[in-house]
Amino acid sequence: MEELVGVIAKALVDHPDEVAVKKVEKDHLIVYELNVHPDDVGKVIGKQGRIAKALRTVVTSAAVKMDKRVTVDIIS
Image 1: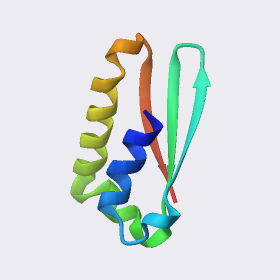
Image 2 (image 1 turned 180 degrees about the horizontal axis):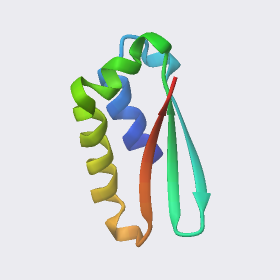
Image 3 (image 1 turned 90 degrees about the vertical axis):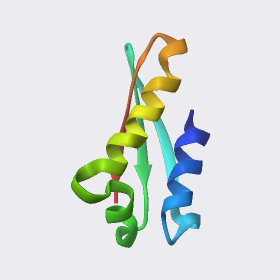
Image 4 (image 1 turned 30 degrees about the horizontal axis):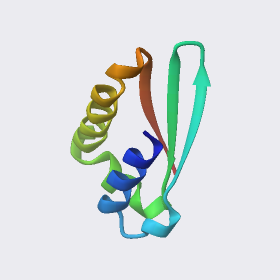
């Protein structure tokens, strides 16, 4: 799942070498912390958060098999 978030983020940004994904587990929740270059934060979030919402939707759909809640936090 970390690879999925990383591949999607790297396709969106200008500095793909500075994309990092960290997995943090809590009870029944998995949080993927996406770190990107400060100049690329807007590209990952998108207008009115549309790209971020789409990224979270893809990750949530892929996590249905795991029976866990998954979310993505974007950190600059």
